Image (cartoon, rainbow, N blue to C red; front, side):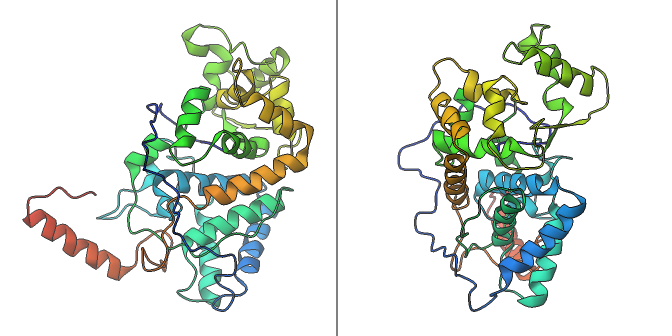
Length: 352
């Protein structure tokens, strides 16, 4: 489920420092968090997502990707939803996100519906997390009880968005490092990558694989030759930046076909095929296991999605419940402005 449809840049290899663990170990998330304050929140989110998916089945993969791009930056805090303002440098214009994120309008529609039922109660971070689980179910994948109680950030971090989101041309070493930085292990990497069993990618992500892999002037040798010709017909050199199905067999369903494709050299992105084609990789037996039993994959996907959804969450009195997902609340803006003015008076550089 790594970076899906956008321009991306290479990241530096990450070292996980002992004692710095990104998961919020003290977070008090609970699937029944809104039982008394907004008991219909799950059904409200489901209704909006289901209605949109009838006309746009691709939105299910896009919402899961949006959740991933949120959690991998400064935690699952809805920072990716914030627009540019005088004090916010939006993550939406980071290289992995620019002109590629989808579903922002859907999240806003969900927020409006939830606010109508339970004003000022449900965070945008929880809405995005719920929308991801519901997208899995509507796409034929597993369901799970979503731990809830996140609050929304007051900041965004475009620099971290550029640095933390793994690229489609990453080798396995870089992929593992990017996931390890978030407290996610090798099984999480393989399981979450299974979200590429549905959705689309732009041709710009794979052109080098098709025509000039690693500057050799030749295609990626890990690509099946028949699949290579199929992709070249969809993505001609100098042609339009078309969309290509991640899975050529069941493009709109979550199933184990992603892993079946890797076994026959039909992973769309280099970062997909790396999981199976890297010699001696410890990801190979995991791919094989998920391919042999879809339930095993679903169980792992469920566990890894819950684990990812707990990365550096804000709870309690941290952050806020945004009234609009694209902007921090007015009171918070006023506080930020005062802090910024005080910092300037002291000769400090604003983090914005």
